[in-house]
Image (tube, rainbow, N blue to C red):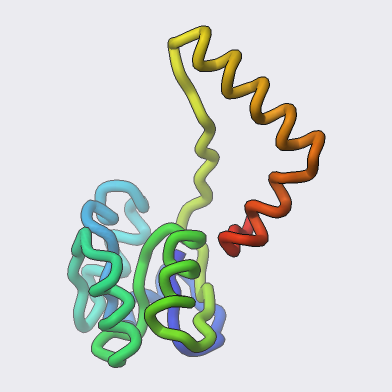
Length: 132
């Protein structure tokens, strides 16, 4: 998603109008429309340092940062300390836990079942500001 300090709804094509910093390798994952839009952006670069992305947004050196929603919103609450907005969702991810180790799978599933039964999942989501 693209996160900014202004509450505005934009499309992927609109990214061409903004100064952007993204996570390292974003161009390789976000598709052709994204690559085309950022090629026209006044300023675009990628970095693996999420804290510096947020510092750049805070200091208004960029208008948007591109990253995973929950990670960026959580870090923004610590670094920017004011409201930030998800301006456009670039790609939906469906990430799941996986393993080839049967014992690990059984242990994980057992723990997950207990957490669901005790309603701990919602508590964890709330504690870490996870949006799903």
